[in-house]
Length: 54
Image: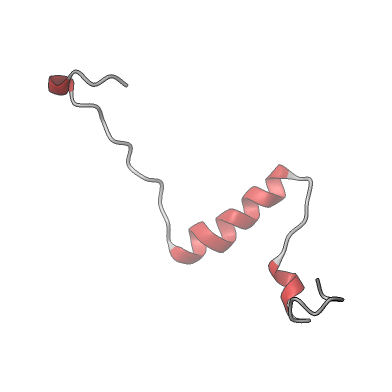
């Protein structure tokens, strides 16, 4: 993409190409979860009175 001028010369640091699941997860945690203070979503519990199941 850099050779075709479809991205800036400064942009390749925005991409991570890896075969390692651990590296990919670490990048996601670092760049999204920690950076933006995200937390896991609370799971919705089924209502027994509506006969909902898990």
